[in-house]
Length: 218
Image (cartoon, rainbow, N blue to C red):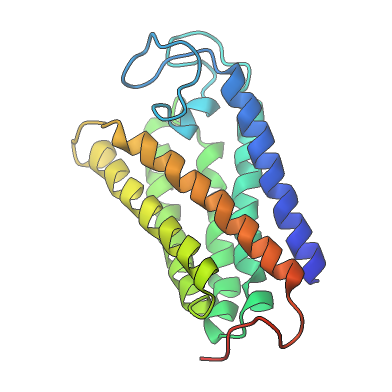
């Protein structure tokens, strides 16, 4: 069970990095700050830009399907990490993370399936509607990992970076604020930390042995 979960999480992560990386390389160009920009800008493009049928410069985007598959893999890696927590921590919160956090993470799958170029308003609503439960799952995960300093630290950084990006997203999408460069940049930081978090959970799961390196009960 632990081996399967750990390897599946690592495989999903690898697929996410590889497919989204190729999608970035194939993105024609354009950001929300400069529609004439050439190619993909790591810090100024949103991940959802990769899902568009056309780049923000108006040219066809041949990497959209790869981006979709890659993002689905990335979401699955988070769901698998949440599901794996009882293998890493004996705390009650770990079991609740599996029961609540994993399904909440799977709910995020609706977001890439509703790309913002075709469903601009619904895409934003989906981000908020699925993001809030996922944050709840992350809080449970932090509670479960409170005795694991490294895992807790990475998880806390993930919660803070994604939370800050979420606030900026709601601000510019629903509250009339302007899109600022910090928003896509924070999204990239949160994405990198997400990869680190799910990878760390996968490695901890693979290394786990009964009664060893697991947090005590609450």
